[in-house]
Image (cartoon, rainbow, N blue to C red; front, side, top):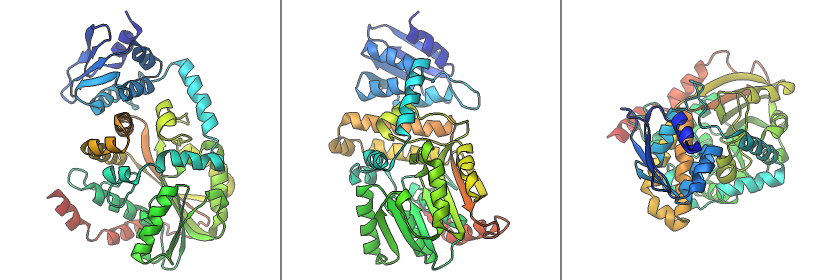
Length: 420
């Protein structure tokens, strides 16, 4: 029996996967499942089979991107869902793991890329965030929030509403007062910084390493007439000077790199006033520390890494900053990524016109893989709050709930309208 047959027999228990092989042979693996759509693949190149066995995610992704693995029944998301649901994290199934030799190579690549010195950090950011503005307009919400939304009613609310709720949820944890100075590390296109100024009257410095993002953020501040209070700079976090009352970082910690964690936390403590508070919102993993998968490292986020919760706590311990609140958002990013996937499919022709069909297929695989990692794998979102002084924040979480309720007092109407 061929290696690929043994691999697929081991991988597919739930759901039905039919494969047409390059030599014309066809075989069905698994069994029908009421939850899963049947998937049929046509693989046209024998090399794809060996690559899938060696590194399932990367091998399938590259075969799909190159048009040598074609999904003829269902779509690529259906394939990824079928694979993931047969390898759920809670049940300790690992059929999708790479071979030992591939794991070794992946580990070496991860350690090299995750060093993330200042020069390479900018290059890594440009790889992903300096893509065409038009691309992000096609699949993100109108505020371009490129991070996990906060879904209060995922069956009925829009992506725009969920992203607005995310900003309110984070802002409530910062315990803001008018006139405070806030540092937004990894400010993206400026949406969070502009929101904090609008709702709380704070002055915000947003920093990024993306040339494309900074142009949009500055333009938005100018158009809103708040450039004196909301400023944006291209600068590495290690080179920031000054003191701030609050630090917020949304979706940036994934790009810091494990060797730089002690540097990051030390620098943030240095930047905070004595009664300063910091909130980090990041993708995280429920398991122990590991390495970045080869597909993500090669095509999506070079230098990127998803931290375990322990890696957000231990590197901060020498800094004597209190960890004052930890929240785990489990399925919120799965809902967000499904929305991005659907919008990407709807924008297929426009994306192919911007790039090409290979890029479009790569982007679909990225979004489908990420969604299912949150739905069935070990990925979640962490929101971790830190404070320099134990007395800065109230001793209960009531202030968060009260502030969030105040920010969202008009939300039920907006959410109801979205459902209609």
